[in-house]
Image (cartoon, rainbow over all chains, first blue to last red; front, side, top):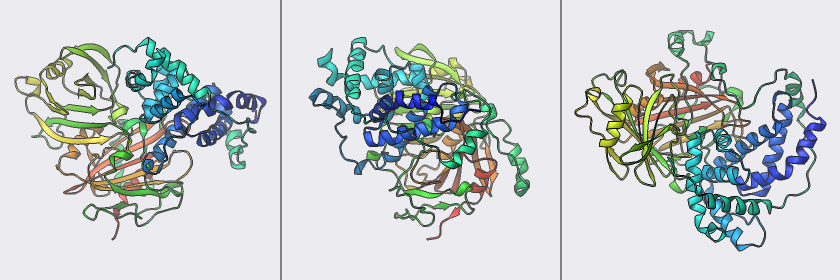
Length: 155
Length: 393
């Protein structure tokens, strides 16, 4: 039996810390929250290390669930939430894109982030979001329609 | 249920989202988080390797009678069909209120709707969970995700105990979202639609009862998706009904005349505008109460969780619609006639499946109660439901 604090855990942590924080920030809109959720997700990976076949995939699953749960917890407090913080560099186009992304329904935003940022296949996204592939396709269709105006200059 | 995605738009989205999120500054990698001491026992006790994302419903613990509940054995044995239920909308459990982390067990800190009974547990809840969030229904629309689903159900009014035994029809109208059950592309009402057979639709809370249902679905408008589903009717009948349905806005009128399969079927109930991200199987506009019990107000949303809702049933037929959704018959629990289904859901915590139970009953002539438990084992959920009583004012 190997202990969870193996070099492999540390390697995974070093390799996936940054991308995981960015993914969580994309899903939650809050970098501080993202770092907390990633720490929590890594803790879960460490806890389950000996029972998982694919630690990186497990990490993503746990992290996406954490982000979605975070969204559920805060959703009813939306009235008290400030406008979405600026996440990025001084680029008006990206700021505008972020404002649109931040205003999307949680599942629609998750589908867009996982498909076009994480580059996951639709089937994998369906498993992460606990829905059918056709639902993901529909979410992507609606999400792209939402982004169309701010992406038109890029086409 | 969607057209082909625009490759140019997809490419632009990929490029710009990558620029956007890659620009997020991330601090230096911290030290690997250390497991709490208590967790090391858990780590060293793990012996079997397993694939984390495989959910085997056959391994889900099933409630079994215990010595303290022997008088209910017939009821419990009646569940041996392995019935399963999913929480509405991807296993979402609504948490509301300020969530300040305090154990708020006891009187609500919000103003209750006096006309609606407010149910509270009469027994100690498992694993030390307590009331962490709560408040009155309805939840303001601006606090919810977009989208809602309405169920109209048809059955045999002459068979009040088993109204869906010989024929059933569920008309599912989704606004600003999608059911998305997969299936095959077909032409419906002159446009793109889909048909299929499945045994559940977790997205809208239809549980896996072990009895497959057939469905046909189409988008009447960009924002209105209509699905006709039945555990008894043939696909041919559903396709015919889809072609002849009259849709005005979100109202769908079904013509049940002139078809032998539909003889005797009448509309028995409606569950109106259940909201995405809202309370499970509770109409979005209904007044009532909603309380959430769990270990703490902070931390990952994972079991054990109990959500207890009571609401005013304005039409008096909501429970018929819930009965169709849950695909079950009423059973006696704690002196009430309760519709009860169980399932497993993986949308919590680490993604591992957790047992989910959904209970619904008529609390009084005007009130429906819906209780959802996640991560309860054995007859813990039964015991809690049996012990629910109205909170004294």
